[in-house]
Length: 122
Image (cartoon, rainbow, N blue to C red):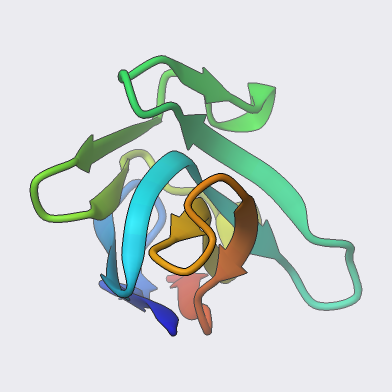
């Protein structure tokens, strides 16, 4: 069993900052790529940022220069530092990880967190 638990969401004013965390736990053999997605009301879930297990990052254009993704492999945790937040960043943010378990070490599957609400409003 693998769990991803996000934290750090909340209400922030435009121009403010938040830091999201996603801790993984369970019968983990290996974590490959990790990433953050978001879903605003009435919209499809979209990719925000991703990071490989060696630290290569990728960002969607709408967050480049404002958000930073990082990970601590020793803690099996991924972070998303969000600066210069805008009202259009309001969404539920989900953590994603490609994980192979102790039971299936050669097969990685996608796992998702439960989501954390980020609201940017004055």
